[in-house]
Image 1 (cartoon, rainbow, N blue to C red):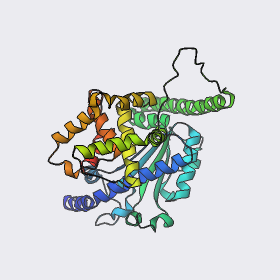
Image 2 (cartoon, rainbow, N blue to C red; image 1 turned 135 degrees about the vertical axis):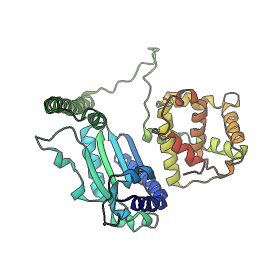
Image 3 (cartoon, rainbow, N blue to C red; image 1 turned 180 degrees about the vertical axis):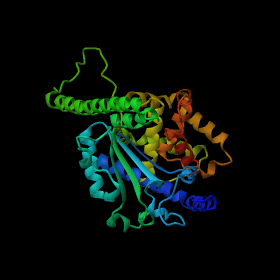
Image 4 (tube, one colour; image 1 turned 45 degrees about the vertical axis):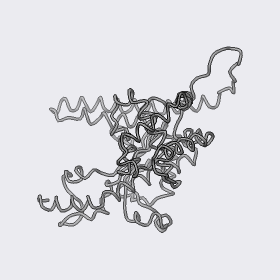
Length: 358
């Protein structure tokens, strides 16, 4: 495609980019809720819209000779779900097939990965769109014609997908054969490890004893790891925490904000992202942090500092309870967070959302 056509379609995509960003966020929340509703523990659910620059750099556009129809390009909105075990992949696939329309001609279902001569450790992937029932709902109608791609992987499959391309560089034929042989062996080991962990997990569940730690032993129990579902439960049990800090934000000067249930779900996801990045992914570490906010007015002082630093633009900020905690973590754990890739970890996006930028 010539430069003028590329620029033209780049402009067309820019006009729709915010819609795709919004769609990615809503589909991410929907899938997170559907999966958690079935009691499946997920490592992460990540969704994004393709960046405009990446769209323009694409080697070619599908569609007509004059350019693509945007609704025919599935990877403008893409999601990835990471789970612990292979059987979780199958469970997620069942949810996906039930809740969405699948374009099987462009999908790789689990059943197609059983070929004995396949190469590597590929993952389940689907090209999906909203089903008729959800697309007919008023709140989903504007996304009705938008496709999206979904990959469902175990964490070990993600290791394969991340590292295999790095060693698949052009080389001479003899070296290429040796490298392929080693990659075959590595993929088999990863698949065996996935199945081995699943088998051990099933054995542990079947044979585990309901032992209660002795109160006289003097030994503290192991930290209780959080995931997104247990984080939500944590704040449901401590609902006063969210109310307290959203009220503090308003008292300091941020505008009152009443979020929708869907908005709160997204705020929860961003809070979970920043807690993991700040290495506060246990109940004990979160408890200690929440308690510390009341020590000598520490939490209120931090929110006041944030407000004073951004006073001119603060009236456009949207600070619900989860977002207030997000801002407190961002400021009080900056020594840890500044060492991380805040863009890749969704922290910048979460911060921009609070500011009303996205």
